[in-house]
Image (cartoon, rainbow, N blue to C red; front, side, top):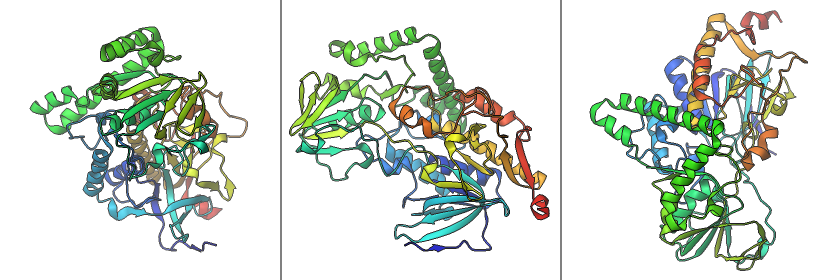
Length: 498
């Protein structure tokens, strides 16, 4: 049984950040810049920073958003490619870590097991576990969850029949083996989302014999150059930071325009995307393989940089098959139609398993917190949970856009608390006063539908809402008063009197 070392009596950090990926690093930088006198620690179960970008190692791993919006507001993206590969993104995070001296604040190899709010002392008691099973407690006044939204230990299992009979290898992209040899082999990639559309051309162009993308239903795809010509032009005449800011603003505007047009005029957007697909594929275009049964942006639009996926098809190195799987057999996959697809390797790019708060056992004064019964507050906090915030990124834009505005808001909140002499800030919701709910997770993607019941609840309007409108959120979170009549502040003297 693991023993737990108590937290040092003299160490109580101003903020504990869980996760050393994009969310955690972004929060740490904003704390360093905007609350320079406060102490922080960044905890992560992995031995290296990067989060998702360190975990996923499948061929071609890249961003599915442009780096002028996936990059941070405070750190220009200077690489030539706007659609970046995983190693380049890790380099970017390494540069930020060095620039802001974050390495000394990171406690890597420490998995957060539990976090309990001690109301009498107004602090979080966080328990971590190392690889050898030893446990340690850390105290902090504020807890920030930058641990992402999916399970690092377990991927989604689609439960295909006959899997045990297949004589080849079955691989999930989340657990890609570093020594996989697929040279000259027949590969079937099950799925049609961002991972599949990345893996297929990467394997096809790096030695696989033949790669087949097997999809149950098609996904709407859009191609764009991996290099941003607008940014390249601006950088010839303007300072780096200004060129980055203008490119970022342009891309935010276009993303927002595309999403809203897809919702208001879906048929026009379908026609536009279909015309682009026909242009890229020519005689290889097949409506059955590239016409989804849903409107654009009912699921996330799939980005194809430099049309590499379509090029692999046109070169005969990759193909697309649409159909339902009946079972695996010894040599491949049998579809319900009776068609057989031969395979040496099967890649199950069938999605992630969502989880909230990194599977941390969160409690308030010993009472477990069921987040599915709490409401989001201002995109990042939770009803009746003191001094806690987290990030769940945009479904219709880059994740980092949310990180930046949440971090700005939290640092503003901390400064307000200092001004008030407050030790706790709680989004207060009285029993029986719950607002009317609204399903903000109205995307039809499988991982969203499977996991949304574990997520906090949403109201129809702010502040009890995780919104999906970045420009509106940015304005609200920068301008709305911190002391809005909803957030309850506990002063230090109240603890003494109690």
